[in-house]
Length: 297
Image (cartoon, rainbow, N blue to C red):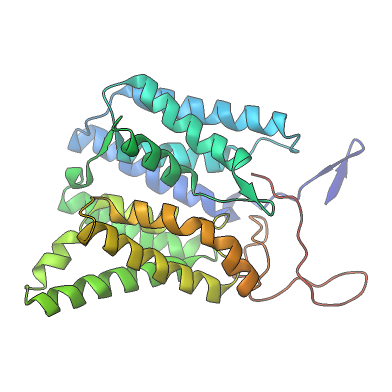
């Protein structure tokens, strides 16, 4: 911590080292490409209201809970993801979704972590009440492939330290899809077609990989990824509901505190990305213990 006018301020990461900047760039590029070339079925007003509401909710929550500074980057990621996924004919629904997403980070918490991924929770609430829908087939193969390359590249350059949960989920999810196809005697082109979804990419690289809502330890994250994948496929093929990964994540997120207790790890800090397997050194006693500080939301 560094002192400034008698108050403590969190150490901020070097500008280009913050992994959220690369995530914002990837999502913004895809949104612009979708608007200009793919003609996404979303109005400029919905985009403006979604982004603006998210920033306002972030500001209000920061002031209400006396946090040290307004962290707008995470709010941008959540709101951009909503713009890419959520479709609605009512602008008030877009405002409601952004409010739910950002507000949940401040309200629904356990052990100083927010429980649900903001975008995931907002989408599930809106879908549950029939106020909107998701259009996974809007991307086109070229846009999907380009976004996949951008997402894979971001794993290398962002230092987000959550590559494991993304790759684990995709491995379990795709592997189980292929195993099901082989068991049923279906051609593998069926599961390969099922994974060509922009919604699945956003889920894998920007939702389940959220450092603030995944288990602290690598072992915990691998178990978490498996649980989400199995639940997603159960919802999709046995409950016959679309968007299985969204429902799988919302169902498994409350298990994160239990996984943190079962497989302890170091709490994630944006300024010092860590995989969670190496505890921080206590400067006073010299012992290796997890040091937990009040997070900036």
